[in-house]
Length: 392
Ligand code: NAD
Ligand code: USQ
Image 1 (tube, rainbow, N blue to C red):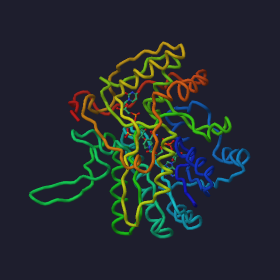
Image 2 (tube, protein in one colour; image 1 turned 180 degrees about the vertical axis):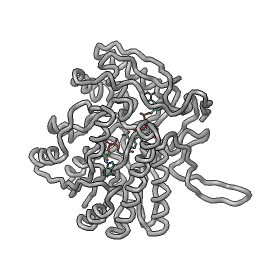
Image 3 (cartoon, protein in one colour; image 1 turned 120 degrees about the horizontal axis):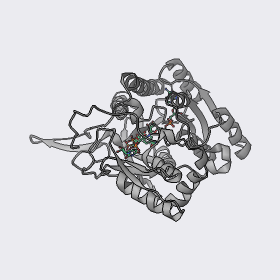
Image 4 (cartoon, rainbow, N blue to C red; image 1 turned 90 degrees about the vertical axis):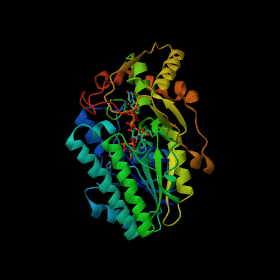
C-alpha cells in the first residue's frame, strides 16, 4: 500500500514509518519538524540526540535497502502543501500523528492553548479536505487519545454510547470530559472527522490511544542512529518514561498528588501493532470507527511502585515522592474503559511487568550521563490554588 505517515519525525511517527516500510509498503513521511522547535523553546532535549530526518531516511536505505520518502511542510498552515502531497502521492492509508501532543504545553498560557488547537484542529481539517478532493476512498487512521473521555463515573465504551431517554433509543458519541486544551483539540478533531464521514463518506479509524511508554522497536534496533525521540522532561515526557529516567539518575519518582489517577497504557511496540491492525482492516466507506488503544490500566502510583521494584533488580535505590499536583484532575476515581475491538482484530499485548527491566530501564540507563535533571520537575500549572479540585 501507499501509506502517508503524518508526523513521521516524531516519537511514534518515525518507528511507524520504519515498521511499515519493513513490511514492504511504500511510505511517504510528512513533518514540519516543529517538535524540534518546541524542544528548543522549552529547553528540552531527548534522551539521545536526534539525527536529522533526512539522515535517518538515508541510513534506513543503507541498512535495509528500502526507501522512505520525505516531504517537509506544515499541514496546518500550508493547505496547498497538503493538497499537493495528497494529489501527488495518492495514499491508500493516512496515519495521522502530526499534532502538538503535550497537555502541559497546551496549558502554558493563552498562546500555547491557541497554538495547540490551531495546529491540531486546522491540520486535521486540511487532511480531511485533501482526502475528500484527491483520495476519497483512502482510510484515515487518526491518533486520538483516551484522555478525550476523561474519567467519568461509568464504564467507557469504544466511542459510542447506547442511550435510552423518555422511551426512545439512540447510539450517540460517548460524552467527553477532557482534561487539557490539548486533549480538547482531539475531541474537536473527532467531531470534525465524524462529520466528514457522515457528509462525504470518509472512512476513518479514530484510535483513542492511552499513554505510550518504551524506547525501542525492532526497527530502532537495526542501527544506533535509527532510535526515536524519547522525552523525559515535565512537558513532553510521559509518566512512565519519566519515572524510568528519574530512577536511573537517582531522583525521586514524581507522583502527582495522591497517585490514584488511573490511565490506559501501552508499549510503543504495541502502538505499531495496533496501527497495523487498523490499516489492514480498514473502516467502511462513511464509517467513523473508534478503537480504544491501550493494553493495561494502572494508577500512576502503582506504576511508580513497579518502577521502584524493577530498579532494585538493577541495583538502583529508587524512591517515590508525592509532589503537589500541577494539574486539575481527580486523584481517586472509577476507571473501566473497554479495549475489545483491537483485541478482536488480533492484538497480542506486551505486558509492562515483562518489559520494564530489560526493554526500558536498562536501555535508559545506558544514557544516564546525558540526562538533564533540571527538566524533571513540572513548571506548568493548570489553575490557581483557590479553585476547588474536581471529583472526576
Ligand atoms: P511527537 O511530538 O513526537 O510527534 C508529532 C510529530 O508531528 C512531530 O515530529 C511534529 O514535528 C509533527 N507535527 C506537529 N504539527 C505538525 C504540523 N502542523 N505539520 C506537520 N508536522 C507536524 O508526538 P508523539 O508522542 O509521537 O505523538 C504522535 C501522535 O500520537 C500525536 O497526535 C499525539 O497526540 C498522539 N498520542 C501520543 C501518545 C503518547 O503517549 N506519545 C498517546 C496518545 C496519543
Ligand atoms: N503524572 C504523574 N507524574 C509525572 C507525570 C505525569 O503523576 O511525572 C500523571 C499525570 O498527572 C496524569 C498521568 O500521569 O494523571 C498521565 O500523564 P502523562 O503526562 O503521562 O500523559 P498525558 O498528559 O495524559 O498525555 C500523554 C501524551 C498525549 C496522549 C495521552 C494519552 O503526552 O499525547 O494523548 O498521554 S491519555 O493520557 O490516555 O489521554
